Image (cartoon, rainbow, N blue to C red; front, top):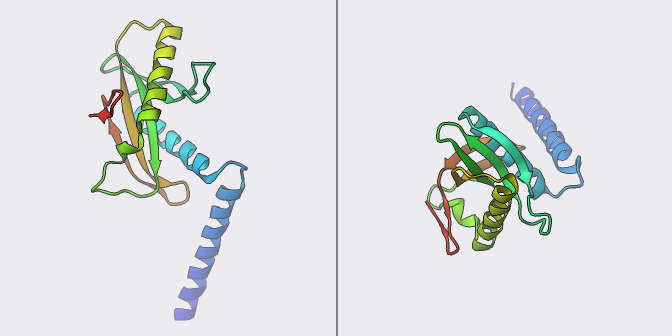
Length: 161
């Protein structure tokens, strides 16, 4: 009986290793990029479940600076607002530390400038806000936790919520 359990466990580990290898080596993209794209897809699913309408993903409205990217631009029909969403993907959840700190001043500045360029390009006159979606997990292990933090203030000094 124990030998059968060991055989099944080894087969399971071999399947996991094969799947991990397929995920990691199927693309020439770095692992961080693969994980980031997965996190953005999970965030998009969450927003759709909450009733948001996704307008754009990975938007770069400022043609002069390709670093100015907005992960997700959505419309919140309940609040009648445009929402600029920054997605942060983390492998593990730490309940004692807010991972929102990973949205540093430089990143906030880039997102803020991209949002202003998008609003100008679209000639949007309504209300808008910044949200952060934190995705915990990996494509290999799956989703362990996801948090939607609304109305984050992307000030020049720090992110407040």
